[in-house]
Image (tube, rainbow, N blue to C red):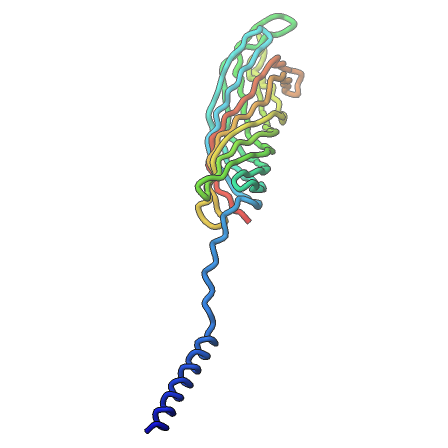
Length: 243
C-alpha cells in the first residue's frame, strides 16, 4: 500500500509538470495595437461649387462713378498639400481654378471726346474664370476638424462691352477681354468625414484693383473706361480626396 501511494503521488506530480510545460508552450496573445492618430499631412484633389457676388465700380470720361454688382455661380477644382506639425498646426498650399457665371449689365453714357456729344449706352461686364494660388495655415481640433485661413495670388478673365448708337450713326458694340491679376484672402473649415475624404466650406475675397480698360469694335470705334474696380466675394462648399 505504501508503494502504491508513492506511485500515485509521483504520477500526479508528473501530470502537473506536464500541464505546466504545455501551458508554457502556448502563445501569449498580444495586446491590441492603438489606432494610428489622424493627420492632415498629405496631398489631395477635389472639387467645389458655390455662389459669387461682384462688388464693382466704374468711372467714365464725365467723371461719373457708378457702383454695380451681380450674383452668380462658381464651380471648379482644387489640388493641394498639407503638413501637420507641433501636434495641431497645419501649413499647406493650394491651387484653384473655376468657371464663373458672373455677369452684370447697366445703363450708362458715352461721350465723344472730339465733339463732346453724350449718348446713352449699355455697359456689360462678365467674369467667366476665377483662379488662385494660396498658402494656408490651419489649426486641427476635435480629431478630424481643421479651421484655416488662406491668402495668395488670384486671377480672373474680364469681358467688357459698351453698346451704344453714335449721334446720327448705326449701333456699335466695342468690346475687350483681358486676364487680371490680384490677390485673395479667405477662411474656412475642413472636416475629414471618412478615410481619405473631407468636406470643406469656405469664404474667399478677391481684389483685382483699380485699372483702366480700352474697348474696340475693330472698325475704328473705341471706348476708354478710365477706372474699373473689380472685387468678388465667393462662398463655396467642396469635397477632397486625400492620398
